[in-house]
Image 1: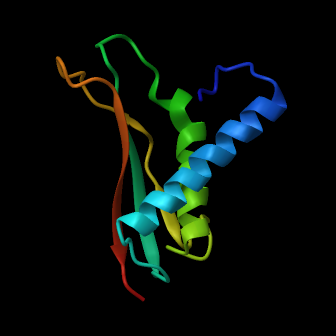
Image 2 (image 1 turned 90 degrees about the vertical axis):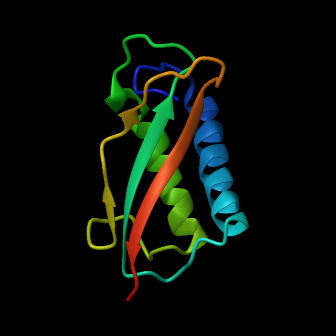
Amino acid sequence: MSMNDRMHWAQKAKLTKTIRQTTATLARAHRIPTGLGHVTVALVYRPRANRRLDADNIAPVLKAACDGLVDHGLVPDDTPQWMTKHMPVIAPAQKGAGGAMWLELTWEDQ
């Protein structure tokens, strides 16, 4: 999902829902705590090959993932009071590793 995508609204909504649900499911599976006071979230994307990419194009993925963390109960809302979102980062490609995307979280207890 990219800010440059021109997909139908229903297709975009389905993809957003999938990202959101997957993030919440993975947070539960990894036993990420809930009810925290504040969290900082960074999205890291490692493409399959090194090429010119614009990091802010993957911001919709970050937004959907942060909503999934809220659905999980990590924090009450994804507003600045509860969550700081860093600009997505594009990591260098690694030969033979394939593409990957992950969230890096740091948090404070209440």
